[in-house]
Amino acid sequence: MARSGAAVLGWVGGIPTYSHAWELHPLVVRQDVRGQGIGQALVTAWEERVRERGALTLYLGTDDDGPEPGTSAGGVSLFPGVLSHAATLAVRDHAAGFYRRLGFEVVGLISDANGPGKADVLMAKSLAAAASSTSGR
Ligand SMILES: CC(C)(COP(=O)(O)OP(=O)(O)OC[C@H]1O[C@@H](n2cnc3c(N)ncnc32)[C@H](O)[C@@H]1OP(=O)(O)O)[C@@H](O)C(=O)NCCC(=O)NCCS
Image 1 (cartoon, rainbow, N blue to C red):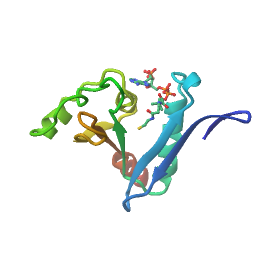
Image 2: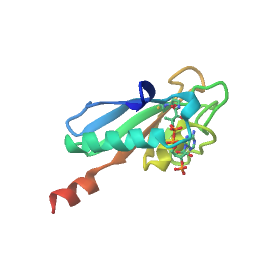
Image 3: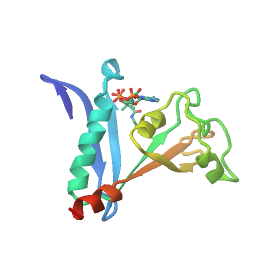
Image 4: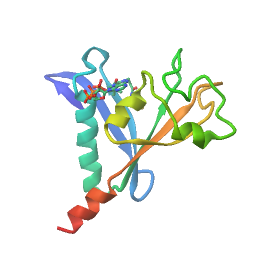
């Protein structure tokens, strides 16, 4: 949790869904303090916590379900050829851009997850290289 005094500025959580992979969920920063590095600080701190618990892979789903599509996966039919849409995903204004900055890459798309043309963008990041370099010390 990110705080300023008693005020909560943001919140991050994680779910240990596999033995070595954690889902990042939820993540939110208070609207009036976005764009100040709080989201990045929350995710970085969370990554450290789960790394200490043996995580090798982090993943998440970020919905493109706004009134206007925020990515090239929004507002279109993704079948057939879902993976080609995933491989070429363009981000306009969407949290997927934030996660890309933090090293996550697109690993899949759930077509129509939130209604017609409203996809969920699946993203993941490896901690394996960092884990093996740490254990090799
Ligand atoms: C997504 C969210 C958590 C980002 O938090 P934030 O505190 O505004 O992000 P930061 O200020 O730490 O941004 C870190 C970097 O990501 C970039 N970034 C942030 N939001 C972005 C967006 N929507 N698209 C592209 N890049 C973005 C920033 O420009 C910054 O880049 P820089 O380091 O080059 O300056 C916040 O916008 C939010 O709470 N959104 C609503 C809830 C949400 O979408 N949660 C995720 C659900 S999966």
